[in-house]
Length: 341
Ligand code: SF4
Image (tube, protein in one colour):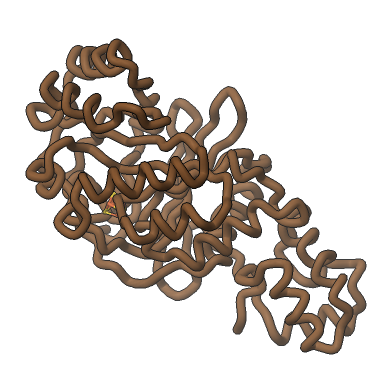
């Protein structure tokens, strides 16, 4: 059955016309799904009984079941959802002073094989559809009885490897008749799929682009992130400069600090050189140790020194708050544990 959440508003209007209905019905359905967050077509009470029956025959609302939920002392909640085909995905809800932020998965598994990531041990199974991406947000809003204000594509999967579905989901998130979340509150994180960064630059979206950089030499970066063998640091930086030029948007560079690997002052110096003149921000992440992972967390002293060096040399850098560190906070960990049990 077709997932009704896979359609953006224009596409849904076409679907309704095909069903012999008026296009404006799509706006009513959008409101029920994204603003009222209903879980059945029967709740769409301003639609005729006949239309509700037609919808039930043609579409599913793809309502996720929660397999497991972990709650951290700081309020971070990690969900493991059953995506209704025997597979499971993770979604994380975080509370900040400015509201609720959600970290969504874009694929089941991941092809990229970053060495510091818990998803690495999990094979790529398939892309999530737009509707499956959106249902993560809706399911969390229903469960926690809240309204999400920020969305981060930083869960399992490489969002730019599922480009069309992610862009379509963003259009629905962004639509005032959909989830009505401004593009400035949406962030896409990539391991560095250069051709897709060029594509994203021409989409004219106002989302924040976040690049997982993590190292300043090709040798170190390729050891951590195999994607660097296809698109090295120089190629990646060129694409980032093009992105900034076309969008006039600041890029956020993620840099996970691993002890005795990429956390010394020489690395900081190279980072300053790489980012000089770019409108950007560096997000320093104390790396999460994963089972069998070869990287361990840098010392607090080194993390602070690294940040101070960047700030003193004109690169704005902050240390990411470690949310949910008492639960399995690295992406893929909850899912992996559950699969192993
Ligand atoms: S860090 Fe992201 S891109 Fe890299 S393997 Fe993990 S999920 Fe994939």
